[in-house]
Length: 254
Image (tube, rainbow, N blue to C red; front, side):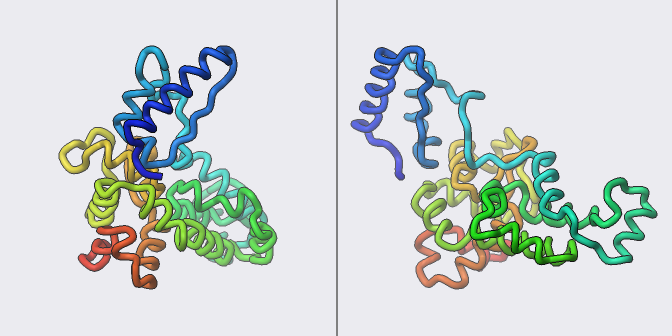
């Protein structure tokens, strides 16, 4: 899960070259763990003319945040059929907001704001893991269903995934970047802002799924902040496992 050494880089080059020779017209898929995917030596190797795999639109980053539009569709589908309280429904009608009268416009926005497009957070619902959708259907009110979605999202991206995705798969520099974003008074950092964050560790922070990259901005969703803070508070070894991220909460990240 760490960076690739010289021998491993050489083996990668050999396998890719052989693939071109024996199966020229076949599609090749190369899967990289987060740390290797942001390693400059790997990026340089794949961009070599004889290999021709530059970091471009052919890359699929599984850590990429869902677009705001896609997230809106997901959350509205999860809230479909729920009922909002009378005051919220009246406000919606008074503001001439379209849609089904029993759908709370504000609730999907609250959920989307909390999760911030984090792809892992929606996984239990997209795969209906352990009957997650059936559990949602038990919640008649939009507010209760929204809280259930948020709670499940935090649980999914937290727990044992934190030491795996961040502790084992993120470099020390990437974890420093995560800490910096947690402590930032600004909610987001725009693309190309070289004054505060180096781009290579920033890519590593995104690959670890602690930081989202959407619409030209980098940020830590509130769901991720809550999951990290819980992990730091409840696990004795947390500080060393994802050092120095837990220090952000001790130093007042929120």
